[in-house]
Length: 263
Image (cartoon, rainbow, N blue to C red; front, side, top):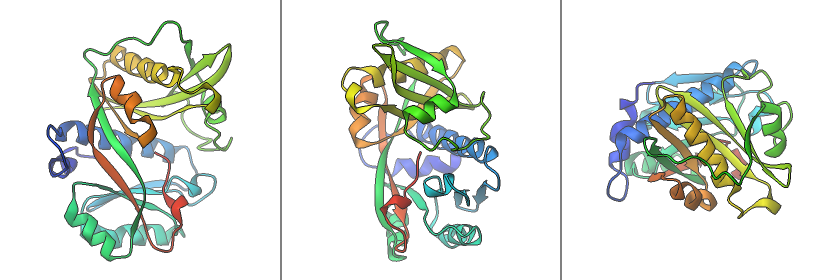
């Protein structure tokens, strides 16, 4: 995906210092990760439509949470809807940057409503610090990540085991946190950093993120990107991520809130 397609979008976002290049790199990495997921799922695809990119997962367990589209132009809404309809998918989320008021108005006129929002964040890796030595963080496999994240055991069962890097964090010897990353064109996308409830507020999620960043720099990545839930924004800001504005996840009226997908 050409990063320039996302450059102009972020410039209309709120607040000073928004970096269009960082946003573009992050969105390109996100789509590349969707494509990697799709390669591990029978019948899945990522469609690059004029003005939109749609990840289409017609079968469970991915069907319930991974049907997402990055929407760039209002004219692309009909093509996006047609792609999901052809696959028999009714519940999906169209992602729109909060700064694109024209596109937001257009999709809302079609009956879409915001069901979830995450914050696009990114950082340069030149000065990233290593993780805290007192917290044990190690590499792990895809199945371990699914277990810690409480995701279905068969999710993306055919994924390339070398495509995503999985790290886990331990508390008193037990695995209590995990996170994954995916490299694309010099950017490292960090996704689904999770910590079990009883182990939160101990710095383990921060250590997971720092380990992923440090390893990405060692591999030669120049930047890192992610989409943060509100509860995790401070964690990511503490390790150097900057705010690039919210991504609003719109669902068609026929869908319930769970239509918003995993990122």
